[in-house]
Image (tube, rainbow, N blue to C red; front, side, top):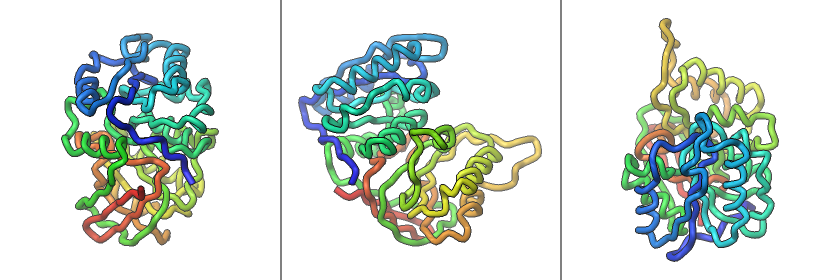
Length: 300
């Protein structure tokens, strides 16, 4: 069984830190939103720090995150943004305090490193969802889903798909995140055991052939064989070569999962999209996939 951090309630203190790329502007919108939910907000040093492309050097970013991990008054930690950099500091963080004083960690993209590491090593749930930098452009639905996840309200989705799904049903823990980061974690202490899990994947700005190559790696590594299900989210701003690759992301995914008997669905509203709905990583959910739509319901 995974560890569920205590749900938030009005008056709780939450923190914003920046474990990866530096911020282009203050997080005023995010602070205002969290305060409107009745939360108190503290900003880490990294939210105003700069070191090359990073929000401070590796030492500062690690210390900032560690400070909030160790502060029992802080009930949730929001990664201000992704970009690149979390993998540089993950081995410097001692997360052991979270086994007795768990708290929510929230983010996506580069923050896949934290989701994967927490689940692999401590079996602690976390939230794949909108980050402070995304608040101004985020859909109302995605922000509401984040609030539901944090405050312990029922979380379920029904969504239409444009690609042809592989129908079926499964009930299992949800894992995954950004495909590029899952690849970067492969074989490390932050890598997750995919067997019997529902895998969620998304990516942004990649070449189509690169998506194909990463998925073939997962297939050859045995990662795709024993899944309970696969959910493809947003694959946005993809690039192609002068000589077109010739296959869509859906076609690539159906190709690498052909012969496996589990449900596969497309177009889940999460990833690098404005309607980036919250997923509780490590939480058991029921996935029902039909030819042109699917549903995902998280257990409470």
